Length: 310
Image 1 (cartoon, helix red, strand yellow):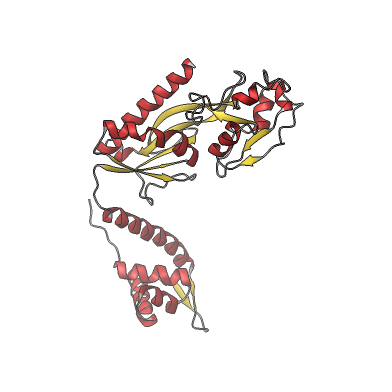
Image 2: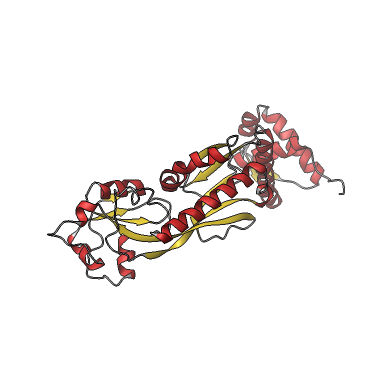
């Protein structure tokens, strides 16, 4: 590799701060030096580049030249990347630990109940679970793997399909056995309270209006009923006999196995998203990550097989 011809980092930091603040004094305060020192570094950088980056104003302020605007935008990105790389390098080396980022409902209803199985198979592996509905920026965040609901398009990432998602109604056995209000087919939902999950940050989520429309049930008012921000809230309300909730094969947890909830009929709707395990390709074979990938893929396959047999 050829030797890089670069100006001193001190010059670049001074220029980037001054460009961001449009003021040498504020840049000096940020970098704990005097405004005079900022000005000297900027002048040295201009000499190095052989072109002006600032126009000095009569009011003692400064304005970026056209070349300065372009250079500042690039240098700001480069310094951000350098800061992120340094932060990653400073992280303590923990080869037997990893951080998993996932959605709240997936963590509560699927992942956490199964972590005991992971501990049995990998007793030396320490797992930290973080909750987030946003896509993970692996360059900025201290996250090793992420579990997300999406369409599987994650460029530059190792992507493992865990489960496809189907939506279906669930209710308590008591509600199902009410002779005054039958619940044997989708059209019977008109006699019951619909429990709505309205999660934040999840686009294209399957709601009651969408589910009923897919079955051609346009005569039912799909907007009525209480709303909840998380799956476990809607499922708990349904288990308490308060109405009928939409559940998914992924997030139903042990409600069906324990008999706390039942499916009144077999109708279901395939969701637009699937669940994926995602991590950078460069770290996918790291022993802790590889062990976690093997475990969760096996757990997901067993979960799918169990659902198919029910």
